[in-house]
Length: 255
Length: 302
Ligand SMILES: Cc1cc2nc3c(=O)[nH]c(=O)nc-3n(C[C@H](O)[C@H](O)[C@H](O)COP(=O)(O)OP(=O)(O)OC[C@H]3O[C@@H](n4cnc5c(N)ncnc54)[C@H](O)[C@@H]3O)c2cc1C
Ligand SMILES: Cc1cc2nc3c(=O)[nH]c(=O)nc-3n(C[C@H](O)[C@H](O)[C@H](O)COP(=O)(O)O)c2cc1C
Ligand code: FES
Image (cartoon, rainbow over all chains, first blue to last red; front, side, top):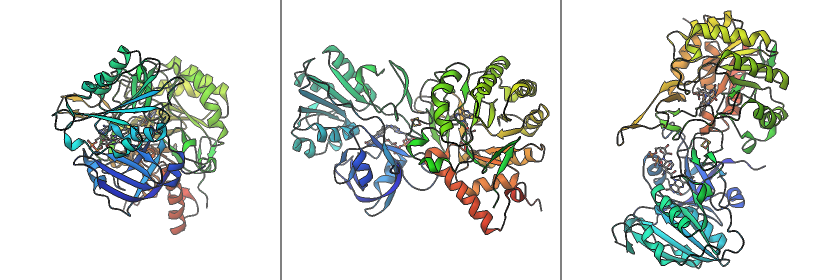
């Protein structure tokens, strides 16, 4: 059995647009095991501040482990200052991955709000060429939009909205729902982002009788299903985001 | 080097254990060989009937610690015994099963169930769960402590450890009540009643409004409580509170603790219990102490 917790070297840690960073880790043992929807739990530094580890979705697992992140608070700002060559204490991969589209699905629509795009990139790496891929991406401003090159290389059609209209359609990502032609038998949805956005995706999916998966966030301590601290209410009762999720059946989520 | 310790008539190979509710799914990050190194495992508290737990958010980060209001989410004793206990027994590590009854009768039935389940090293009575919305905890009421300890002691096949709450004026006095009622040991502390408020929303950060504080933030207070209790009772003490490193654990042992339990630290560093054990041995080697009993309670009052 390989160790679930280890220290790994940072290969790079760069800004990819005004608001987002990409961090690459030399972590072959994680690359070998990782599945889309899973995450890593990072100890930002060996001190009591920040106290908890911080969870980040795996955005790619090819040669290296990649995460995309947005500095929002103490932990993520400290992370953004890490240099190439430094070591990071990482637990993972952990969490229940996305389940793959069921039989009969031809079109996969990925709907992301902000940095929620991260796990969907890894997903597109796995689904490319097998499905018609569409990404609906909603960012707050153009600072929250990066080039999305990898999605396009995966043959994914990319549609963008921003709250202020600085890139793409002006408004929430739900403005883009009209641009796709979903079919209840052949379309499958994957979504990750802020709760109100996921709620709108859920009601859109219900309206069109679409099946799908949603990836959730909650404050985490252990990320191993031990503390029962990250539980959310679902249609099947309380479920831990770290162990039963982060990927859940979209229809089971309660917003 | 002798690091074995005893509670009642039961011997543990070493003094390092884990605090209830903080150590689960260990199979994911430990080799079985590593799990076997622990002196004992204490699983999450089990109640008679299943409990679904408190509404989220259930945890929050605080300076050098955390708040929790999990609400003793657990599958209930019967399901625990059927589905979780076998795997725990298979590790071969002594088990200290933590039980919580909502009244004396429930404590009695729980004890009977675990008597029947067999292969357990001790029972820990969770007298101190601050999360269930009661006005006063058993652990805050000397008469309740006495009654529950006596009730369980009368029928238990196993040594009985009373887990005490720090939310009292004099925890040493509560420990004495437990000792006089027949407890084989006391464990302290459980979490400190605490809260945090989100000023943007003026709401508590916890769904349950209040919760319990744990982690290094509580260690100096817990250490004081253990030290005071060690001077008051003769039964062994299992020290709990903010242990992250061997040095933290050694402070408790020097203050008089027989065993030490690693709690919240498991979330930050899953290997903390093993590092604590290795560090205690290193310290004893370095200071030429060949029996942990020589270290226990060796605080120099100067
Ligand atoms: C499964 C999962 C996957 C995630 N993937 C990504 C990702 O790929 N990229 C990314 O940028 N962010 C991701 N996040 C969110 C990221 O973990 C938080 O932004 C980060 O923890 C904030 O820490 P901070 O110290 O910068 O912020 P602070 O505000 O200082 O954090 C304070 C506390 O709140 C918690 N917290 C704050 N925001 C969140 C949040 N959105 N979700 C969970 N906990 C939060 C922190 O863990 C900490 O306990 C993910 C969260 C989860 C649960
Ligand atoms: C998330 C969480 C869950 C806990 N659950 C239990 C429990 O089920 N039973 C119990 O007796 N104590 C429980 N505790 C308390 C711990 O066992 C321990 O007494 C306390 O956290 C102090 O130790 P620490 O600072 O090392 O964490 C829990 C603590 C945390 C943080
Ligand atoms: S973070 Fe501990 S159970 Fe999910």
